[in-house]
Image 1 (spheres, rainbow, N blue to C red):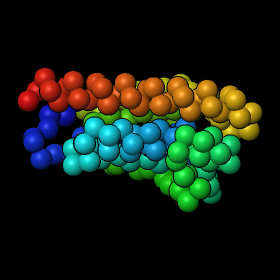
Image 2: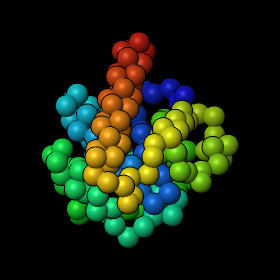
Image 3: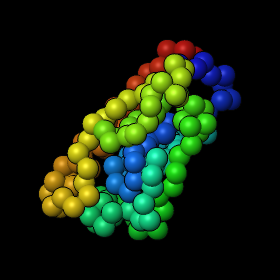
Length: 151
């Protein structure tokens, strides 16, 4: 993993193929964790897909609204290999067409292997959402521990 100076932000990317479900939920939870922990000036969050779709899946918008997030105005976007190479952590959702070797050895890539929420019933989408929330929280715990150990 890349060493950081005190001024370099830690870059995290959440990505999948469509950028319309799991990566959007991950990004929303990561933005909230970053704010809760006071890391706005230390952590930069990216999201995108290898083949983004037009909009966030309706079932994802609905279950995230239940958790206090409005994803209705978010637009899936493409993420570039250069963006991924600039990251410290990349979390793929289990559907990625990413060739990990193309990103390089300096990036900590995590495949979360999450079920696709698209077309799932609301209870299953809630389960996926809750698992994502836990994974994001654990990632931030790890980042804070690493930061504390190196400072």
